[in-house]
Image (cartoon, rainbow, N blue to C red):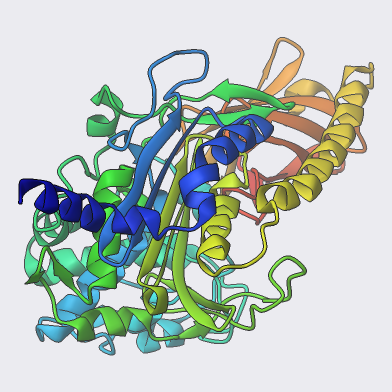
Length: 505
């Protein structure tokens, strides 16, 4: 009898494993290790949940390049914008509890809230904040906000200085400041910080014991990854970015094991371990399409027909299934979370370098294996054009760096460029002439200094001390032998826009 029970137990407990695709059972480890090497990814964590069970939850590689401490299922990553789904769900929960309304004006909760245009301020609802339709271009304003010394409230207050690229509600534009604003609304209606609210309403009941929203907690956790990026195709370890001020848009640090519980909760209609935590109607509200978000034309995913944004979730279709997902990018991290209710399937992949496409390709690879599609190496398909683009960019950069090494005389004395400059949104920067170079110092980013070398034609090549900001061409405007202004740009990863700073003195 004991033998029969044992055999039955082994069969039942192993069924979820044996039912998995061959890629999961036989090929996953080989694939991940090979593709991590291809992309120079130091560390990666993956979780797969299927039919109410965690079938994969493990780490690969190391927390820090050049070290031996391995990544495991409890290793922390900055999951960045994967935080938005928690915020959207929290707001939808408060909407269901009648503590706020998604369609009330933002100013009814935050009287100090203003957008650039008074009419937009008057019209803007909580729902508008959560589906990226307030008129700003994607990442617009993050040059100021990301990793800066501003508080969350100050970021909200600065939104009135950000001139929109698009008309209000006309076009999708991914806006971190809008989600920070939503977090401040949670604080206003509950008298509880966004951090504490999601801790008590999500992290605790979902047994996400390692998850937090604190830079210092992440910094001091011995089982936390170090961030990395690529500089001239070589992996570089970065200091951990303090993004506490990004709050409800990006501040969560988590691990594969904890976030697997978040996926189980999503796939079980708001239940966890058999206990209902929130009504399914709350989750359904976050998943409704609110805005068309992206061009869906794709040679790689030919059966994808739409891509929409809800309240903290992106959704798209693939092979006649609807998928909800979100990605996250912070200095030295890119992460992805996806789930497919029709298949009772969820996948997450977190990486500790911001210079890879494997985090997304691997999720799609797992999805295609569960869909029974013929194997094709999606990581390779992502890598080939990405690498070619990187090589072309590096070639252009090498040419500019060689030009900067040449002795080219500036049109005015180098000291004439020195001074205080101001941009309406950002505030002040200071440019100093130091050791035959210009260095730019940012009032809200004291950790980042730009070193500029002359290229000719009033343009300088600016190399930032923060590698994530990249190397950018910075033009000055000169009139009557006087420096009038400078146009500053950082990497598109942070902000696509350029910002003109006028000289004050």
